[in-house]
Amino acid sequence: MFMELLASFAAGIGAAGLVLLLNLITGNRLPKWAMPVGAGLAMIGFAIWSEYSWAERTIGALPEGVEVIETVEESRFWKPWTYIAPQTTRVLAADIAGIRENDSVQGARLVDLYLFERWQAPGKVMELVRCDDPARALATEAALADPEEAAKWLPVTREDPIYGAVCTD
Image 1 (cartoon, rainbow, N blue to C red):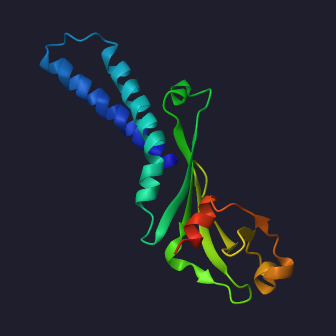
Image 2 (cartoon, helix red, strand yellow; image 1 turned 120 degrees about the horizontal axis):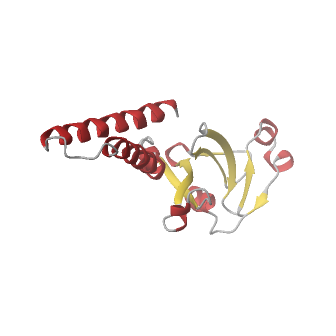
């Protein structure tokens, strides 16, 4: 967040410099308010670009074998333009290349899920996914030791994005 604040200031200073240069070229014909307005518009433009492009930049930085399962787009009342063009605020990705079979439960697979949310630290959770009888469970130590008894299996449909990503061969 701090680096984006610095980048926003840099965009404002750069825009102010361009307006100053344009003013010198035109023989001081621009109004006095042109420089602060140009700097402000550049800072607002950079902030909006940064908000809308963070998900794309995050997804582009994912390593090979990690696939995006789901994205969440939201609108916020303090950002009225998001009602016209909703903003991606969360991304869920799975390490498809690193899926492991769980020998203690027939048809269960263990997958690492990565959770990305704007302005939050990334999160990582492991889940058990039963492919034969569609269900998911958080892979706690107890669940990994005894998946049939200790895991809290949640039934899911075959349309569930995590089930679809993990159980398609």
